[in-house]
Image (cartoon, rainbow, N blue to C red; front, top):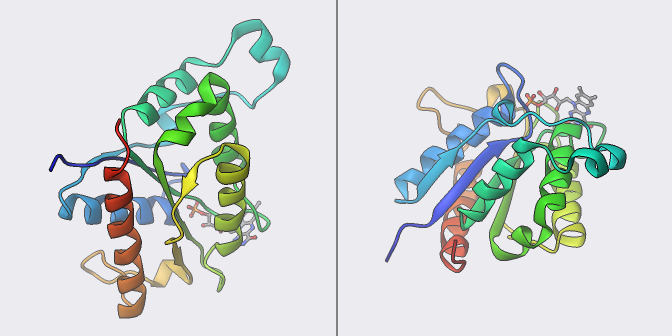
Length: 188
Ligand SMILES: Cc1cc2nc3c(=O)[nH]c(=O)nc-3n(C[C@H](O)[C@H](O)[C@H](O)COP(=O)(O)O)c2cc1C
């Protein structure tokens, strides 16, 4: 069976980002399952804030076109999104919006999985739900039910780079395994 191709990125480009740590963890776990993983940073795909006049004058930015091509080249996509004011970060939303303006159908033909990490006790759960709404209702994506929510995230990792809590480890592993299996169902 061919390896599933999976794109992984965080909705934060902050130095020391908790969600970048989560994205790196998921990338390692997916590779251990023999997936072909591309782990990128949105820092390398800068885009202006979406503005309809800008789109009319210039079309989608190069970064949106490149990211769209990257989405299209993978069967699964994992997004680790921080929670801002109980919702999705402007960076993640702006990125999703611009890619949808290149071609929204790319969202309908791959498997998405979501994660969030926060020092709060809800583990970014509300941002998971908000991102699910954008992807499922807005873009028509399949977003798997298994998600990863890391609460008290600065203190959640052990020295091996794994989640310290064994039940959190198990649930993260279930989500990663589900993503690898779901991605195999889509042709990229
Ligand atoms: C504008 C703003 C709003 C925030 N709102 C929340 C929130 O609603 N819930 C939460 O758990 N953390 C909230 N935070 C804290 C972020 O979760 C925290 O800064 C986290 O480290 C950001 O993710 P990152 O480490 O991947 O950059 C907020 C941070 C900012 C800047």
